[in-house]
Image (cartoon, rainbow, N blue to C red; front, side):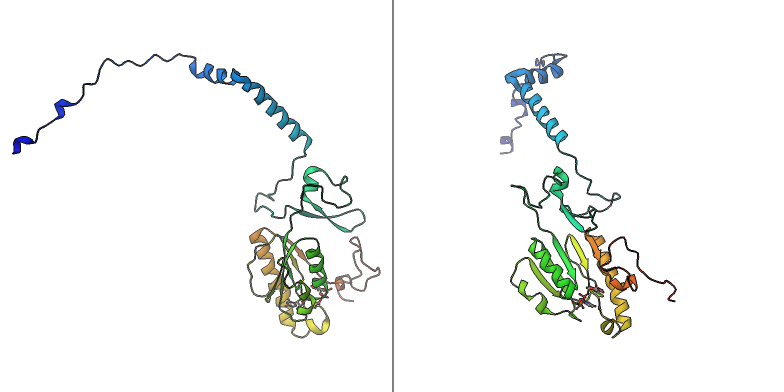
Length: 257
Ligand SMILES: O=C(O)[C@H]1O[C@H](OP(=O)(O)OP(=O)(O)OC[C@H]2O[C@@H](n3ccc(=O)[nH]c3=O)[C@H](O)[C@@H]2O)[C@H](O)[C@@H](O)[C@@H]1O
């Protein structure tokens, strides 16, 4: 029986040991791609492509780098705030900057085919007097708004006309506690505004201003959002000018005399 286990190695096919590869043509690696390009007018198509790309890049001004100091990219690619000559705050959509449409599009209308992308914005203190009007404007222009408010002085009634709008959210939250949200811009308005309110619990007022602002700044840094901090006209002292323009320095005696 053992003799049936036959070693068949010797039956393996005979491999011709006479194989010799064709000698490589020395210039084949250079001439082959050139030949490929010249065939079927491929070179013409390549040159036309290069010409179109050159014209395109020459006519369109290059956009600004989204990186600041090599750090986190600023996600607000769509709106930039500038002070124009009359010191009014104006916003310029990125497509205007990119395509140089600022003068051409002075009416603020979006050119056909270029739809302005809405921003995601958090408004702290958005249920208050100033905040709720800001929210109205942001919603009106197409942005998505998250209001963060602890309702210390603010009221739900100020924003309830936006309930049911998918671009509006309301969060009851005290900015003294950290909060993580994904937005493009932060408008930080949460603060007791009038003396009767900010003197009610002065230490809490300091916490709101210091810790609350630090929390929101930390969030802005973490997610690369732009930040707006509101203050009070009281910083101008007893102003000699109403309303105070950006160039007005105020009427404040720094040593309180
Ligand atoms: O001109 C000013 O001095 C003030 O103007 C606005 O305040 P205003 O809208 O007039 O005041 P409120 O209507 O009381 O709005 C403040 C909002 O912040 C909210 N808030 C207050 C305190 C707090 O700890 N957290 C918080 O969310 C309140 O509930 C309220 O909704 C700004 O929101 C203030 O930041 C600014 O100091």
